[in-house]
Image (cartoon, helix red, strand yellow):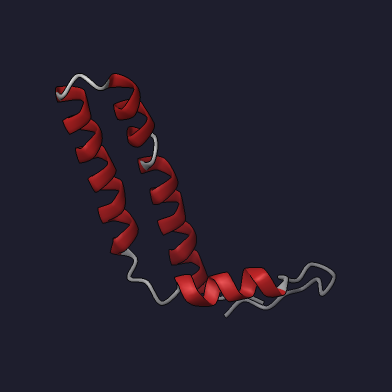
Length: 79
């Protein structure tokens, strides 16, 4: 595990609590959420609901970023 070389930069209690809870989720959860949002977006496009489709389609990137964050927390841990 990585050690914190600068004790002035530590995680707060809220960040630690969130990391402990999200680390319990399987990493592929976020991948499936991203793929699901793309599927819903495609469905909305086919139903001619363009604005809703664009809104839902933009969820994919944040889900993938959350998955990456989740993976880093699992590998490196927190403070």
